[in-house]
Image (cartoon, rainbow over the protein chains, first blue to last red):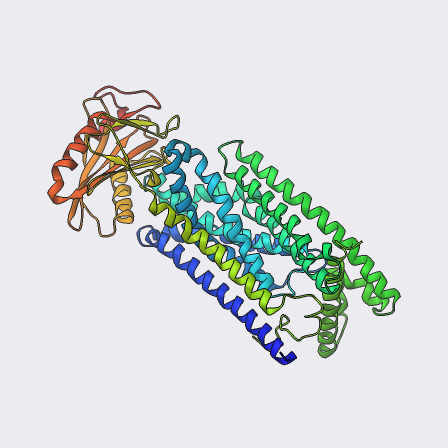
Length: 356
Length: 221
């Protein structure tokens, strides 16, 4: 096969992944519409309110989670794409999968057992896997987007956020029958206050962040093998399987705890927040250290000017340095160079996480 | 794919980054789609295959929301079967007897409301669960055991039934019952309705005797 032919095939394969992702999102949206469209017809004001009340969480969460990525925010388009996956493909498919598995628990173990445990024995498996599929699809659809566990964690949290927002809307709508249909707006408001005020701090975004870090580890190990020509077997993709599996199991365990009848919701939120926060602090700390070393090395080698090196790792410093440039063309050139250098720093700093 | 797409193969850094080969990418895509399909279609299919009904012995009494704020007990007549996949003792039971259907749902009221508002809520919920439902007017009642509520007829296509809202003593909760069957099975609907009105008892809060309602409630009836 020629090089040109290989490149075409690579482009085709990426196109196939993206088309499949769009189809999955459309399918999930259709399932959600089918399941909840009736609320829009019968309780239009409450249905609109349920959506509107989630917009602050969606917007603030999207901005904050992207800012959590040290040095620079992840790509806007792919951040939005993975969020949409969580909100549509994952949420829609999870609706069907959970109905099926919850029903099986009720039939096999009885309704008393199922009323206590079916949620915590169904949703974690289905939902964590379906949300994680979005992060994997991102790796396949945009191969340079996730360089390591920190990227995986940020994109995972965005997928979780999308899922969380849609789930909150569905909980809000489902609270209308639980209040006898007497005051649908108030039922939706009460549900939103609980889910945004308390549970949102430690819900889906924390779980998928942890699972997403695992995908990042897997990607990192895979690339390490390719970069070394496959000579070091233990650094190959198999080396990434264990951390990926550990992260997924941890995310599922967090979800099981979250859906279990005990302990109190506050304890569950704190546990999830602490687990995700601890992993984030370790990964981001190591990433920043490695990034600084990479920049210092490049500066010593004369590949980066001292002025560039001084501002490269800070969002604010980069922005200020660009503002000082008078010419639009020069600013555009410097911006492109900053991006190129940051791409390199991202990859090298991520790889350094598993290299001695 | 756009010409300036930074993810495009062939651009500087793409191969260096160790992106997967097309074959590996497609293999992963197939794996992801397979897993999603297994979860999304597999569980519902398996759920459909497993039998979905538990016969209830005559004289069985069901408790909804046991230990909770809307806890109530009710008697169920002969021939009804519980559908476990659609039942959750905390919130709702779905029972069937041939083509007839009976649902019992617990609801917590955000604030005390009038009978008219309760019926308006019931009407809306019937429209939500039974598209095209035609709901008649309500009739308040107090059963021989002192249980207050409102009831009224409704119809959906060729089926007709009764909707009942039982009101908990402190006016903070209700039990909503819907009995629906083909018009030819009207006797079953009437029998189920009569038994439920006779037997529903709220377990949380004081159990009131006939006519012993809160003053405001009595005045409304």
